[in-house]
Image 1 (cartoon, rainbow, N blue to C red):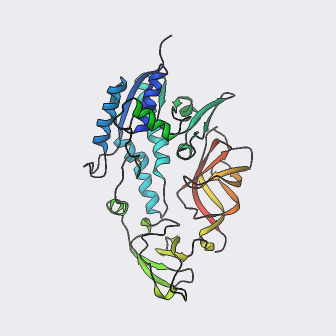
Image 2: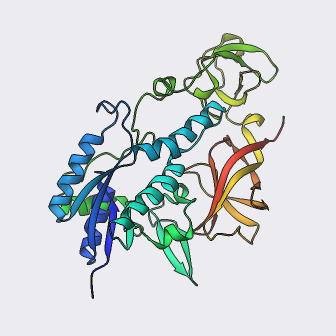
Length: 369
């Protein structure tokens, strides 16, 4: 019986490297594919593409597989980065990893892999795929601290049917140990963070080059102006650091201390940033949310209304009541108020360990207006 051909996305990091090795051990014909998706200012200061490519080639040589590079920079700019900028200009806070997975890693990459003769693709994501009565399900990874199903919630049946996640049943510590045991040079390489494919860089400085911005007033809920913001795009709901209003004497308590300030709202029409004092201010707490651009992994909205939801990565699942509004969106009502629900982020639903899908948050309903 001929070996199945699997094309794996190799980033130069330890996760995709060990994934490739595991697939080879399982008897697959493995081909590595390094995706280059960002060309602007790729000078090595913040974008590590050159070093990542060298690491990926070295790993491929050690484990004995072929690797090639493919350039998706045009697709990334059109399908991901343009939307990323539009969202920021609208005062929202997008999650580029979600769109990047749906449009690049599991669309452009999948199409390219099929052209190479692959029967399946694989990535180093921490998640699982399971076939259940002819439907493919996305499940949380064994390692709850690394689970990435939140970022994968926009995948569809066709994409999941072609995808392998070799690390779904491993803990990160085990992955690093495997890498060290087989002599991979990136066994201790730091995990990448920052913007998907763009890397770690001073965020405000980076956005400055792509967005027009206009300073405006920073106000308290009662309308008192206490400062000036540098542009609404540079702030996110719940932000505490970098607002630029720390230590205002008039807001201190009798003992000389003061509660921290948090970004609570953005009024695009008046270009006003509203801030509040105290982590649990009512303006930071929401009883429900509305969301659009729904994407359900099974192809259909969930039948049950009592589910769990995450409104940000690394958040614990929280119980909610889901109301689906046709193909256009949904609302979710929380059993307990939730903190700093952020327009532009994803609301992702779970039934136990099964990720059902989700959508993009439009409006959180504050406890008190």
